[in-house]
Image (cartoon, rainbow, N blue to C red; front, side):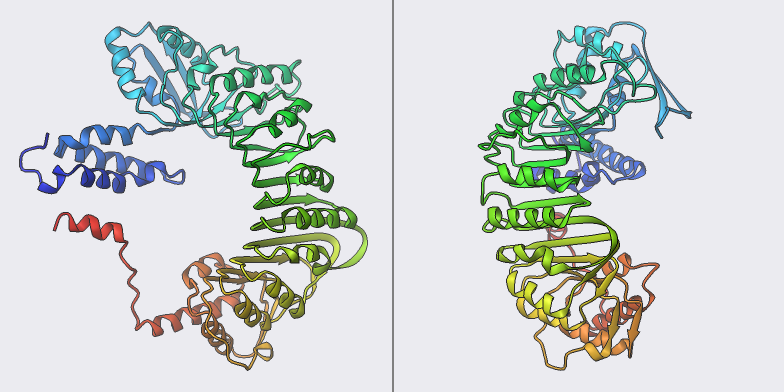
Length: 534
C-alpha cells in the first residue's frame, strides 16, 4: 500500500488524513482565491504520487467542492464546453459559457464520470448555461432518472424562468441538506405572464426531490410565490433574502407546523392569520428591513421563553410600536434570550431628542443577555446616553459578552468612566463599542480597578482627545491589558487619527510588557503533526 522509501509515519492512516486536512483546509473556505485553491490541488497531487495511501483521500478532497457542474461534465468526451472570457454574461461578472453535446457517453465513459461524481458533496452554483438544461435532461435519461451527483449535500440553484428545464431534480438528490434557490428574474423577465406560477412549479419540483432538507435559502423578488415547505419535514433553517417579500398565505401555516425549524430569517410581510400554536422549536428570529407591526405579529405567536437570538432591522417604527416590540421581547423571552441585535431607522417630521434608555428599558429584565447590539439613526433625531445609563445596563446584564451601542447624532454621551463601570460589573465582556466622541483626561477615574479580560474596544469617533494621549493609553492598558491591538488597528485604519495614536501606544506597552517578543504561539495541531515526523 505504501510506496518504497516512504517515511514510516505515512503508514499511519490518521497521519495521512491530518496532512490532507492541513493541505486542503482552504478548499472548504469560500474566501479562498483561485490561486490558493490551485496550490492546494498541486500539493494533494504531489502527496498522492509519493504515497498510494493518499490517492483515495486526496481525490475525495479534490472533488469535495466544485465551483459549478462544468469540471465534472468535462470528464465526458462527448460534451464540449466553450468559455468566452472576453464576453461577459448579461448582468454577471462570469464569462459566457456554452455547452454542446456531440453524442451519448459510452459505458466506459459513464463509469469514469460516476467514479468522480460520487465524490462531489458541494457545488457552489448550478447555473443554466447555454445548452446545459438540454444536456442535463439527456444525461438524466442515460442515468435512468437518478441524480448525477448521488451524494451531493449542498448547492445553489440558479433557475431562469424562461428556461423549460424538465431536469431540475437531476442536480437535487435526496441526500441534499443545504439548498439555495435563486429565482430572481433576468432581463425582460419582470413582466412575464404567470411568473409566480412558473417559479412555484420549479420550487415544488425541487422540494419534492429533497424530503430531508435541513437548510433552505430563497433569493427572489417574486411576490405570491407558493413555497411548499411542508414537503421538508426536517427543515431546520429558512432564509429568504429579499425585503418586503409576500409569500402565499399557506406558507406561514406550513412553516409554523415544522417541528424541527429552529431559525427563520428574512424580510417578510407577515399576514394576520398565523397559527398561535406553532414554531415549537424556533430559537432564532432575524427580520431584515421590516415594519414593526410585522415583527410584533411573529413575536406574539412564538411560544414564550423559547427564543435565544433576535435580530431586527426596523424601518420607521412609531414610539408605540417600538415600545410594544421591546415589551413583547421582555415578557416572552426574559428567561431564554441571549442575543439581541437591532438596527432602528427612525424618522421624524420635527427635531426630537430620544433617550436610549426609554427604548431598551423593558429589556433590562433579561438577566441572561450575552450580546446586546443597538444601532440607531434618524433624520432630525438626537439620542441621549449617559454614564448613569451605562451603570444601569451593566448592573442589569452581568453576563454580557458583547456590547455594541452605535448611535448617530448623539446629544449626550458616556465618558471613560463607563469603561470602569462595565469592567466592574460585566466580568465576561469581550467586545465593547461605545458612542464616545470625545476622550478627556479629566474623565479618567482616580480609583484603582482590577484588570479586565476585554479583547476588543472601539469608539464611534474620538475626534477630540483632551490631554496627553499617553495618559489615556496607560489608563486603557491598565484596565484592559489583554486587548487585541493588532485587530483594532486594522479596523481603524485610515480614520480616527487620535484613536490610532492611542492604539500605537497600547501596542508599544504590550510589547514592553511581553519582553519585546513578537512571536506567536504555534498551534497545537501543528506541533502534534511535526512530532509524527520527528
